[in-house]
Length: 377
Image (cartoon, rainbow, N blue to C red; front, side, top):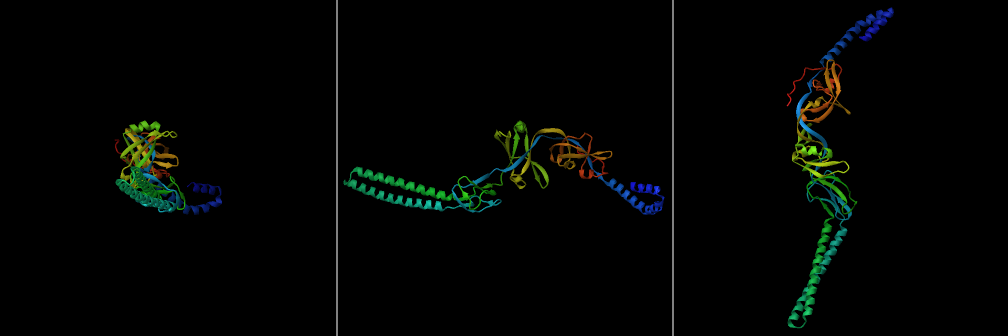
């Protein structure tokens, strides 16, 4: 309309252009009227539902970030030295207890087994000879042909041969055990988290080869600041936030324990929350979770989660006014699922917030009639 008015004024200043303006206006006026009417109708159709900020009784406490960890996790290392001949698994593989994971070159260990077996055979032969000599000496001494000292010597030789046989047998068992160390097996059923060596690498006692974990049970580990440790102990309940099918749910651990020391650098105390078996369906080791410590209830101002608008570091809501909607920055507190999110600052008691902040940001959007609100608990 402003453009049409400017054209009309210019035509008044230039009488020669006025007849052309009249001819053009016959076609422009209906078009501009239709555009203006459609704009008015479009603005009138943008109705955004609103709801008043509600004061509800919600659990008090604080929230911290935690990490999911498997209770059973082992770093598998070699117990023998040698080249890794085969590595039979990779990260993500499922293994059974006793399954072979890697094999170390056992040629040296096999040589040791053969040497110990030969020593056992020699010790057994010496024992048989000593036993026969003792028997003969005993018979001769009974007939009076040899002295008692000769019998004592034969008895000593027999006992030495028995000890040598036992020593050789122990050496053979040790050699067989050392050869068994060249076959690395899984200590329990689980999954391979990562591999830290490849075939051809040199293995040595204590050098990590791979990391294995059991999928059950799981726990949430959270580092609680020392300044909040008393509040955490006084809290009547600890909960872990789990997302299942796009919905948030707070679950309670089946057991809670703490490490009786504080980290000297971060000044935090480690809390371990044992999770129920059902949580393994939606949680993975290493996943970050939210842990909440609650110890009572208090009246807090809350708004629905859908009303929150997040843009980078800005957290805000659209508040209804006489001319549409006004964007207000707010400071949020703890989330309480279906009960909404705490608003610590930024809202007045009579503010009405838009449930759809995207539509509320469109120019001309108006607040729909106030949606019915649930009574405060």
